[in-house]
Image 1 (cartoon, helix red, strand yellow):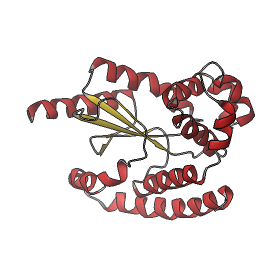
Image 2: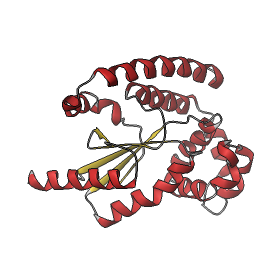
Image 3: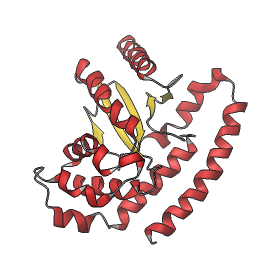
Image 4: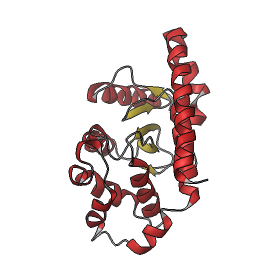
Length: 219
């Protein structure tokens, strides 16, 4: 399936799911949140999702992100600091939500870089240079390439690999999972299967602290 057809179909599915998700959210008592989180845990983590941290870490942060999202760029160092403050105890799972037009091509670059074991250096290079290649949340892929030099990437191979249909399938799956979880903006965080009570640095820190305390209590 061609990429524009794929994402047109995804857009229709997302709109429908967002409407249903918003209605369900309004109908769901807050005391059922843990139950719903458990039911939807399979939607949060997929085998294809990039991860950072130990596989057996007691706490998992799942982040839906858009590489063209300025707030995602601002949160990345904060998430890395949380992980550094608790070495070996937190695993980060990255899911794609390329809501800005053109972001799917940047995600494809990230996935192609992952085939060369360069996902995280590429992500950090793109976030650091985001203001250049994505002014006003408008990704311009032709400006990306100069920021990938010096990372040890085979750029010719990357340009070929980013066109693979498997990457389209990964993006489509992440978008469908995002819609099923009522993710409508980025970054969106889930800590051990639970969404944040509200958006912000402090709610994320508090949710992680609570999950770490709960994990310590289970030992």
